Amino acid sequence: MKNCWKLRLNSLVVLLLIFCSVRLFAQYDKVEEGYFQFPIQPERTNYLAGNMGELRASHFHAGLDIKTNGVEGLNVYTAADGYVSRIAVSTGGYGNCVYVAHPNGTTTVYAHLQSFNKELAKYVLENQYQQKSFTVNLFPERNQFKLKQGEILGFSGNSGSSTGPHLHFEIRNIQQQVLDPLRFGFSQIKDQIAPIAERIALKTMNIDARVNGEFGRFEFNLERRGNEYVIADTILATGKLGIELWGHDKLDGAANKNGIPFIDVFQNDQLLFRQRIDTVSFALQNNIRVHTNYQAEQETRRRYNKLYVDDGNALGFYQKLKNNGFFYAKADSIYNFKILLADAYNNQRLVSFVVKGADSSTVAIATATSENHSYILDNTLQLKKKKEGDAHKITLYTAEGSRVIDPAYQSTLDNIYLIDLSKGVPSKIDYGHGMEDLNLVNSIPSGVLYDFSDASFTIQFNKNSLFDTLYLEASHQLTENRKSEILKLGPSPIPLKSGISIELSPLANYDSLETYQVYSLSSNGKPSYIGGEWVNGKIRFSTSSLDEFTLLKDKVKPTIQYKPTTNGTVFFTIDDAMSGIASYEAKLNGEWVLMHYDPKKKLIWSELLDKSKPISGDFALVVTDNAGNKKSLNLKL
Image (cartoon, rainbow, N blue to C red):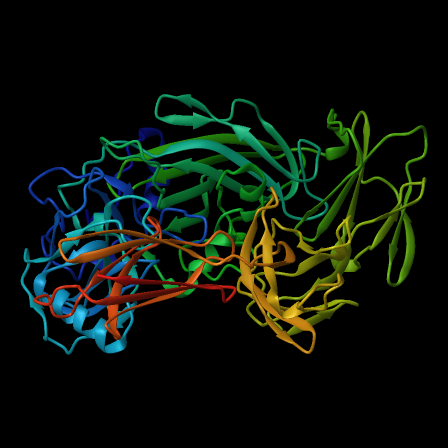
């Protein structure tokens, strides 16, 4: 596993020399072979639901998700000698989790546990009672809990943000960066399946670039030929372009689609881009939004891996880059592209396609639209308008004045206009039959503090809010019945790097104003609680996405349903229909009682510190939702 890949494609010997010129496993060399034992069912073949570096919606997956076939309570074993350095219990995230520090400087992590071994469970319970909290984050004294390799530390489960029973397992280096456990040669995981490529996309990276004569982003189907995928037709292009890949990897015996950690892109046998997801830094997890094409994912539901380093991307996954992975197509030139995909078990796949540099004015375009259409791609606003006679010019209106522009190019039925937003943001457009409002209000620079103010709202961007310049769309209006309002921020497919703060002056007339709070609205109008704080008749709130927001009032108390006591444990289901559960507290004969909480099951259950005592007497439970509504239940047990 520590040797360079041996490419199995005889026709690519020259590329192999380049491909193997970087030592992939240097940081793994310090760990001797066989140092770690597999943490669960080590006597048999295991299967994965997720691998290291897999591209998730909001993060790179760290470590392995090891399947337990829907079963909870399997023994989880310590991977190597060490001591417990941290224990965490929470309703989300890793749920019940144990961290073990090892003499060689590494740390192993075991997450979504059902429960801990007896010694650790006693320690956790005592601290929960001391802190009067189900959620705890504990750091035992060094060597307080020593563990030998193969010793049971807990039992597998489905706690936290898990969507099904499994063990999440990580190996971290001394900097707490996550390493790929598969690089350590666990025989319990089998893989002879090469990565699978689904589609390739080409994206124009500036206003002058074209793909098959058009500006934008274009996806191409791949055809399987043996161990190779190809695009059957030659692509015509010109200008600065970026390549993207939609694909996945599979392992033996499991249908799950995992990530592809290693990718090399060659242009005419010269290395253009190299990706090595061999460590994951938690501090840079939000960069997943620029490593993948976030905008395309929101629009197509396909998660494309960018094979170039875009603006704002601070990840260290990339090596030997040329022009940050972008390529420049020139007229009458031929570009042969080969993309090499590989997984942690040295299974490789090749993707090939050809791009021919072509003058875009010579390419016939047959696209058509049913109505006028506007779209922002990076720094360019694209407008499409159906042809109407010989009138082709349109007028743009900006804060600086107006200007008349011609189409950048034409299809058989449409005029296509391209506007460089870095030179000015238009607010209105006249196609020749009256004004249309674009709702573009300003350009927001990245990397600086910036306040944008409108008549009824203010948005504060901090230095880390944006990956790149944002061309902000914003509108705040009453709904049709004038009894509520919507603040709409966009473009919604553009990612934020971190949160923004908003102060909103309400437009509608509300009874008892301060009982209303902010909710975001999904595409189907379903509200999700955001919250907010009222100050001098304005509500302040934060958001990490550009959405639609409204003010709603939650007047309904949470619900509590008592379930029969079993083996000295009392159970309740708790729920809230609108703003969601904020907190709960239980007391037995006036003394605080620990209630475990599983939000997925909407279930809470008791655990006494002194197991010898019966759970009897006066029991009181108070559940509070995020809007401050309280529901109480008193029982005689």
